[in-house]
Image (cartoon, rainbow, N blue to C red; front, side, top):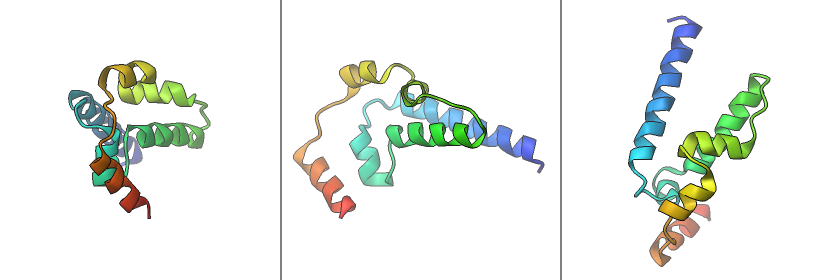
Length: 96
């Protein structure tokens, strides 16, 4: 497979991941961090880093809007629940 086709497939998979995450707003970032070790914010940071590797400059807030499908402040106000003591304990345990 050539690089162009590989890049197109990887981009399609990334877009599908964003669609999936958008359909699962009930899954909190802390849940993702506790289970998989990354969250929507991590994807946003990776997006910024990938753009920089390609010589492009993307603002972190713009990257978060791409990942969240809306401005982060709006997503946070509408969908982010306060982390439970159990979620925080799980996160602390993984961070050790």
